[in-house]
Image 1 (cartoon, rainbow, N blue to C red):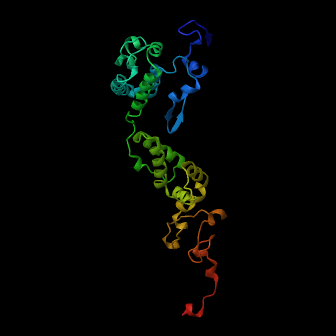
Image 2 (image 1 turned 45 degrees about the vertical axis):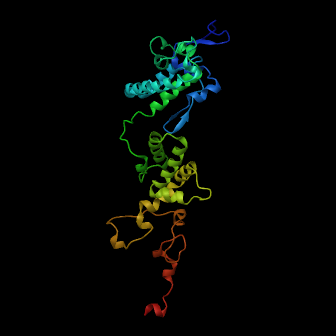
Image 3 (image 1 turned 90 degrees about the vertical axis):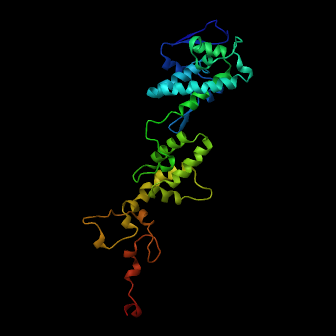
Length: 296
């Protein structure tokens, strides 16, 4: 990549020439105050660019191009919805001091869409104020989340953890649906936590219930607990008979129970003596001689 200094528009500006746009994205620093404008959420995690071509950092053209790459087949649908949303944005701008561009011409729909003579990123930056450019990019982002998912749309209420599913994978599936169906980030976080507790499988639900209640566990604490303790708590779920043993005759032919470790046995409470570490069938109380009253 070549670094060039030109006498263009601003003598203080530093201009760059590059052959590979991908290298430009990760080679030229983006001003820290501009990074929040490029924050976005992907599969439940928030990211932001820290390097981007200077001079393009406020450009709807760049935003437009990124979304085109991300959407692929859904791009035409997104573009139509975006341009429709920009009509509302235009009406709002016309009521503000930003109603004219830097050449003192009234801002039009083409200004916002970057079409015709305004398709150049540099021209958009020159003519439009930062607040107008922000409105264009915000409209693009909001429209992005309105695109229907190619997957079968399911209410987040019906997202349940499968018996053998990792808790983190379940939370990711749940988060994906909540973020598509709820716009408020605060409400999103509350719903994800609530539904993760409610719709967890039996193993993870028992782990979550074993956590301290005051203060209530955070989602991160639930994920950590379910990830590290799932194996310990899953034995009774895989073999329900271990918790409530049935007569041998009722067991399935050829069924064999896996031996439990001492740590796992400590979570078993005897129904006879109420002590941990063994089942009622193996309770030491069974070995004591019965009284005469019991024999009669």
